[in-house]
Image (cartoon, rainbow, N blue to C red; front, side, top):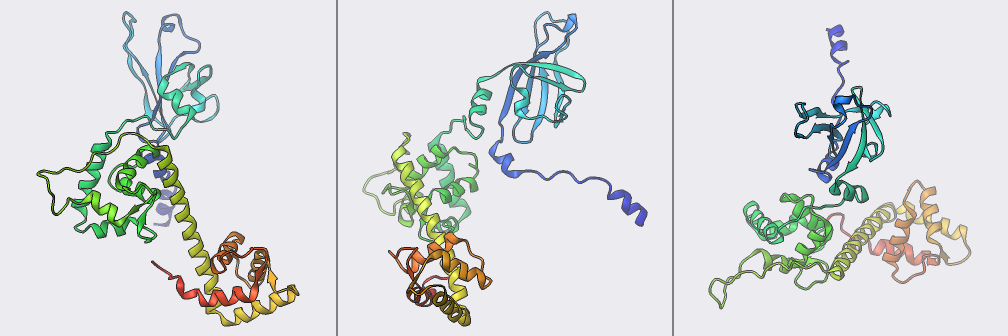
Length: 345
């Protein structure tokens, strides 16, 4: 049994799939034109299309049909992960640029050209060139929400990850990913989010969410329909939405930092008095810098990011200079404000 086990464990496991890469670059294919580098007389006119698949780094070679060529064209190389015999490593998109030579299974090719789509992707690998019917996307998302969740409240709570009562740009992108639109460009996400955000303040409140998702209980008109989605892109709204998202991210970082520091100072009473003594020893003034607070906590076995210490100081003592923090007021504020921040929201 031991001998057989040692043999079976010699079989290598398949490499783990990069799912982020699969979703980000799904259906993105780079196409290049090539010919034999040193052709025989009968192969001079042969032309090949080299396809490189960004989602899994596979390569395939196809020979398109040509009139009066005298050769059966079609698939020349099966789609798979192949090695470039010139570089000795797996193929990369840079190996296929016009003017370079590649060699696969002892066939050497000279790269001639690339199509327009490939040229654009080389300028921006994360770009999206697929057009979407925004109204159809909106209707599909709306119908999918209704079918999956019986209550609008449950939908909103599910996607409001920080439970602050609003859905920001990053959270709204996750909503679209949940219902099958994982590769939408940022501009499209902003346009759909703007339809939900009737106040156009860069975030979606619960009432705005309900207004778009639900039909009115009572209307003064027969067969009243929802307003159509605006097709034009508003850069000013995109900036507001991005600013709101960054503001919410920073707020969450402040909450986590203040809670973590509070757990040390409030829950461990001996740490409170130890810090008080250390602050009085390192300075004869009534103030310390946030860097000195960080050093004292580090000396006591609590390693925090200095930026988190600065966030905590600015939270418990609004308007104070981080380089002149009254340490008595800081320690008192950490104790009195501890219960203002719940561990979970």
